Length: 163
Image (cartoon, rainbow, N blue to C red; front, side):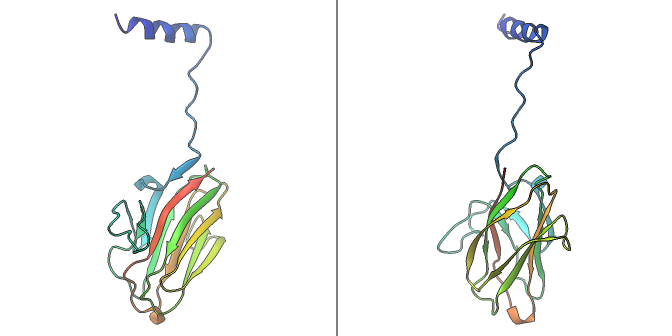
């Protein structure tokens, strides 16, 4: 009995040529799912706030290294799939590294067009917002070289796609 009314409404809408409103794509999409992320080298996507704590701030989600890194890449792909126009995130560099880190944000692949370059001093946190219209995936990463020594923690905090 309780199914008759909804079924009648659906049949009436169909006979009038009406359809249910299509689902709108989100205007803000936090990068929290494996389908939105891929490791390039030395990273993991996590919701574990303990590993995303930098003392003055704790990120709700983010990309970080699982173990200390030295002379290695720290890089990942984020996948907006061409549906968003901007990427917003917070970059964090370990305070114990011995030199500045150069982050590259590139279109589509590790050697793609540079969308933004960001330099972080040891212990620095930097908010970024990068234009990514029509881009399927974004490479974001840095390289630890011999002059950096060891990095216990590098973070791409709360990466989010925006319309």
